[in-house]
Image (cartoon, rainbow, N blue to C red):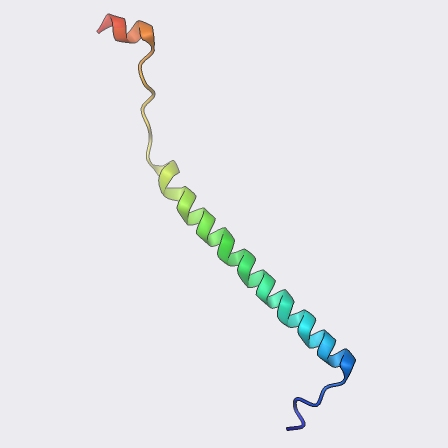
Length: 58
């Protein structure tokens, strides 16, 4: 096939473009995964434990 008959510089450009697309996709995936895993823990509110003075009052 003549489509895949690329010169050395054309192959280099295609390789750079493919690597750039993979990198962008990986970064987007990582951001989505870390964003969704952080979201539930920040959504739940934790009550602070009572201080020593508060526990003596009860």
